[in-house]
Length: 387
Image (cartoon, rainbow, N blue to C red; front, top):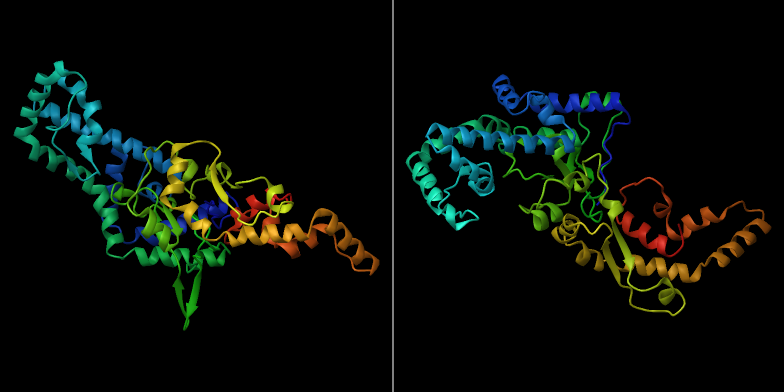
């Protein structure tokens, strides 16, 4: 629910950052020239370095190009076994189910064209496919594996994984020399749990997991792409998200914390269920908070459900209780009186400093600091008239 603040401050530092990452991970990838050739078949403007270091929204574009490439490959294979040209028009309808998880080609026997009158053509298509299905499977899997397995394999064997963790833990000498270092605090999905690193007997331990925002099982060729890896807490990555994914690729650039176009934090808002006056003036005891999808986007609702955010934040409603309790005591007029008392006693302090000391400084920070519950506190504070 908060954008990742990568350690670079300008384009020069960003280039240093991604170059350092590529150097770390690419040394364990074999057959790089062969992989590059295959990547360029998908998109001539891409190579291995771009695949591993491209911005998230560029990765989404590559996924779409990759799917088109596979679709084209399927059509070529079907033509090679002399499937009738008229029958190829059903490929659009079949494609999503025909190609499953970038792993295997499935039978069309259970797929039905929209019109019953096409039944005969469907049966003819299946007869042609049945004869050569194993051959088609092998051909397409071979094309997939050249890219996917070469990148995915070292990650699964932890050859590269430990180096990626070390990179995020600021163990890269080139980046340290240039003072380009991560500052991880809380999970970028929930903004609840800490994901910081710590030292035990001079050894650095990490308190985070790396989530593949675009699932490793479905997009293995992105398994070590830097901007597809989200530092997150164990609960979000394993207990809640797991293998779940969003329905469409089209909104992911707004949802992934690694995306430059991320704006989910602006589209979700924690709201007091009742008017502020009910809590401040009428002393309503039970504080109820709703997490509202301001944009009314289905994928934003899915994000809330995927990470069980409403239930998890409900468990921490003592935070909003505490803000409301303090606001009852320290109204604006009361704060003005306290400021006057300080000035009478020659103590220089302004109202804003007073508010920070009473309510906590994090809610008055203009930039996100990724402190725990930062968004939650800011949203409630805004409704209490503090900011």
